[in-house]
Amino acid sequence: IFYLQEFLVNQELNIQLATLVSIIIAIIGLLITALFFNKLGRQHGLKLISRIALKSNNQWDDILLKRKVFNRFSHFIPAMVIYISTPFVFTGHQQLISVITSITNIYMVIIVALTIGAILNAVLDIYRTHPVAKEIPIKGFMQVIKLIIYFISGVLVFSILLNKSPLYLISGF
Image (tube, rainbow, N blue to C red; front, side, top):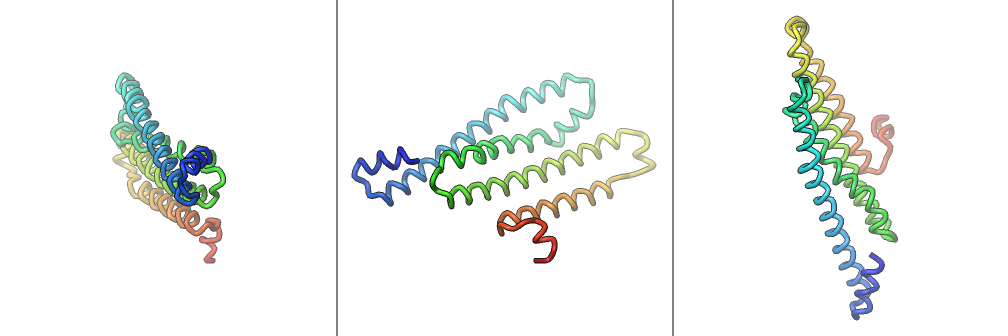
Protein backbone atom coordinates (compact mmCIF):
# COMPACT_ATOMS: atom_id res chain seq x y z
CA ILE A 1 0.00 0.00 0.00
CA PHE A 2 2.80 2.36 0.90
CA TYR A 3 4.28 2.45 -2.62
CA LEU A 4 0.91 2.92 -4.26
CA GLN A 5 0.03 5.65 -1.78
CA GLU A 6 3.38 7.35 -2.43
CA PHE A 7 2.80 7.14 -6.19
CA LEU A 8 -0.66 8.71 -5.86
CA VAL A 9 0.68 11.52 -3.66
CA ASN A 10 3.36 12.18 -6.28
CA GLN A 11 0.52 12.50 -8.81
CA GLU A 12 -0.71 15.43 -6.69
CA LEU A 13 -3.50 13.57 -4.94
CA ASN A 14 -4.02 14.62 -1.32
CA ILE A 15 -2.76 12.16 1.31
CA GLN A 16 -6.20 11.13 2.64
CA LEU A 17 -7.56 10.35 -0.80
CA ALA A 18 -4.34 8.60 -1.81
CA THR A 19 -4.57 6.43 1.32
CA LEU A 20 -8.21 5.57 0.67
CA VAL A 21 -7.63 4.74 -3.00
CA SER A 22 -4.59 2.60 -2.19
CA ILE A 23 -6.52 0.68 0.48
CA ILE A 24 -9.42 0.06 -1.91
CA ILE A 25 -7.05 -1.14 -4.64
CA ALA A 26 -5.26 -3.42 -2.14
CA ILE A 27 -8.57 -4.91 -0.96
CA ILE A 28 -9.64 -5.53 -4.56
CA GLY A 29 -6.25 -7.11 -5.31
CA LEU A 30 -6.47 -9.33 -2.25
CA LEU A 31 -9.99 -10.45 -3.17
CA ILE A 32 -8.94 -11.19 -6.75
CA THR A 33 -6.00 -13.25 -5.44
CA ALA A 34 -8.30 -15.16 -3.08
CA LEU A 35 -10.78 -15.80 -5.91
CA PHE A 36 -7.93 -17.04 -8.10
CA PHE A 37 -6.85 -19.55 -5.44
CA ASN A 38 -10.49 -20.54 -4.90
CA LYS A 39 -10.91 -21.23 -8.61
CA LEU A 40 -7.58 -23.06 -8.73
CA GLY A 41 -8.53 -25.24 -5.76
CA ARG A 42 -11.96 -26.00 -7.13
CA GLN A 43 -10.95 -26.66 -10.72
CA HIS A 44 -7.85 -28.69 -10.03
CA GLY A 45 -7.99 -29.86 -6.42
CA LEU A 46 -11.62 -30.94 -6.33
CA LYS A 47 -11.46 -32.55 -9.77
CA LEU A 48 -8.35 -34.49 -8.76
CA ILE A 49 -9.98 -35.66 -5.52
CA SER A 50 -13.15 -36.61 -7.43
CA ARG A 51 -11.21 -38.66 -9.97
CA ILE A 52 -9.27 -40.48 -7.25
CA ALA A 53 -12.44 -41.16 -5.24
CA LEU A 54 -14.41 -42.44 -8.21
CA LYS A 55 -11.58 -44.78 -9.28
CA SER A 56 -11.14 -46.29 -5.84
CA ASN A 57 -13.03 -49.32 -4.64
CA ASN A 58 -13.92 -47.72 -1.31
CA GLN A 59 -17.44 -46.54 -0.82
CA TRP A 60 -16.61 -44.05 1.92
CA ASP A 61 -14.77 -41.62 -0.37
CA ASP A 62 -17.76 -41.59 -2.72
CA ILE A 63 -19.96 -40.72 0.25
CA LEU A 64 -17.57 -37.92 1.28
CA LEU A 65 -17.91 -36.54 -2.26
CA LYS A 66 -21.70 -36.91 -2.19
CA ARG A 67 -21.87 -35.04 1.11
CA LYS A 68 -19.61 -32.30 -0.37
CA VAL A 69 -17.02 -32.52 2.41
CA PHE A 70 -14.17 -31.58 0.07
CA ASN A 71 -16.26 -28.89 -1.59
CA ARG A 72 -16.95 -27.23 1.76
CA PHE A 73 -13.36 -27.51 2.87
CA SER A 74 -12.14 -25.93 -0.39
CA HIS A 75 -13.56 -22.60 0.87
CA PHE A 76 -10.77 -22.66 3.44
CA ILE A 77 -8.12 -21.99 0.76
CA PRO A 78 -9.12 -18.40 -0.14
CA ALA A 79 -9.74 -17.65 3.53
CA MET A 80 -6.20 -18.73 4.37
CA VAL A 81 -4.83 -16.62 1.50
CA ILE A 82 -6.58 -13.56 2.91
CA TYR A 83 -5.60 -14.39 6.50
CA ILE A 84 -1.91 -14.87 5.66
CA SER A 85 -1.65 -11.95 3.21
CA THR A 86 -3.49 -9.28 5.18
CA PRO A 87 -0.66 -8.30 7.58
CA PHE A 88 1.75 -7.95 4.65
CA VAL A 89 -0.60 -6.10 2.30
CA PHE A 90 -1.90 -3.65 4.90
CA THR A 91 1.29 -2.99 6.87
CA GLY A 92 0.84 0.12 8.99
CA HIS A 93 -2.96 -0.04 9.01
CA GLN A 94 -3.51 -2.02 12.21
CA GLN A 95 -7.25 -1.36 12.52
CA LEU A 96 -7.86 -2.56 8.98
CA ILE A 97 -5.74 -5.65 9.61
CA SER A 98 -7.76 -6.35 12.75
CA VAL A 99 -11.12 -6.01 10.96
CA ILE A 100 -10.12 -8.16 7.96
CA THR A 101 -8.53 -10.78 10.22
CA SER A 102 -11.65 -10.94 12.39
CA ILE A 103 -13.95 -11.34 9.38
CA THR A 104 -11.66 -14.03 7.97
CA ASN A 105 -11.54 -15.85 11.32
CA ILE A 106 -15.34 -15.85 11.51
CA TYR A 107 -15.55 -17.20 7.97
CA MET A 108 -13.03 -19.95 8.78
CA VAL A 109 -14.96 -20.96 11.92
CA ILE A 110 -18.13 -21.26 9.85
CA ILE A 111 -16.31 -23.26 7.15
CA VAL A 112 -14.87 -25.66 9.72
CA ALA A 113 -18.27 -26.11 11.39
CA LEU A 114 -20.01 -26.81 8.08
CA THR A 115 -17.23 -29.18 7.01
CA ILE A 116 -17.46 -31.11 10.28
CA GLY A 117 -21.25 -31.26 9.83
CA ALA A 118 -20.76 -32.70 6.33
CA ILE A 119 -18.24 -35.22 7.69
CA LEU A 120 -20.73 -36.31 10.35
CA ASN A 121 -23.42 -36.73 7.66
CA ALA A 122 -20.98 -38.86 5.67
CA VAL A 123 -20.11 -40.93 8.75
CA LEU A 124 -23.82 -41.54 9.28
CA ASP A 125 -24.24 -42.61 5.64
CA ILE A 126 -21.25 -44.95 5.93
CA TYR A 127 -22.59 -46.36 9.20
CA ARG A 128 -25.95 -47.06 7.56
CA THR A 129 -24.24 -49.38 5.08
CA HIS A 130 -23.38 -51.79 7.92
CA PRO A 131 -25.91 -54.35 9.22
CA VAL A 132 -25.54 -53.16 12.80
CA ALA A 133 -27.06 -49.79 11.80
CA LYS A 134 -30.53 -51.36 11.69
CA GLU A 135 -30.19 -52.51 15.28
CA ILE A 136 -28.39 -49.49 16.75
CA PRO A 137 -29.37 -46.20 15.10
CA ILE A 138 -27.03 -43.26 15.74
CA LYS A 139 -28.80 -40.43 13.90
CA GLY A 140 -29.89 -38.76 17.14
CA PHE A 141 -26.37 -39.02 18.54
CA MET A 142 -24.97 -37.38 15.39
CA GLN A 143 -27.52 -34.58 15.63
CA VAL A 144 -26.47 -33.89 19.22
CA ILE A 145 -22.82 -33.77 18.17
CA LYS A 146 -23.71 -31.33 15.37
CA LEU A 147 -25.63 -29.13 17.80
CA ILE A 148 -22.61 -29.05 20.12
CA ILE A 149 -20.31 -28.17 17.20
CA TYR A 150 -22.62 -25.40 16.01
CA PHE A 151 -22.96 -24.07 19.56
CA ILE A 152 -19.17 -23.99 19.98
CA SER A 153 -18.87 -22.31 16.58
CA GLY A 154 -21.42 -19.68 17.62
CA VAL A 155 -19.47 -19.01 20.82
CA LEU A 156 -16.27 -18.69 18.79
CA VAL A 157 -17.92 -16.27 16.35
CA PHE A 158 -19.23 -14.10 19.19
CA SER A 159 -15.86 -14.20 20.92
CA ILE A 160 -14.21 -12.96 17.72
CA LEU A 161 -16.82 -10.22 17.29
CA LEU A 162 -16.48 -9.08 20.90
CA ASN A 163 -12.71 -9.63 20.97
CA LYS A 164 -13.08 -11.68 24.14
CA SER A 165 -11.98 -15.18 25.07
CA PRO A 166 -14.57 -17.91 24.43
CA LEU A 167 -14.18 -18.87 28.08
CA TYR A 168 -15.23 -15.33 29.01
CA LEU A 169 -18.49 -15.80 27.10
CA ILE A 170 -19.17 -19.26 28.48
CA SER A 171 -18.52 -18.18 32.06
CA GLY A 172 -21.38 -15.69 31.88
CA PHE A 173 -19.34 -12.48 31.57
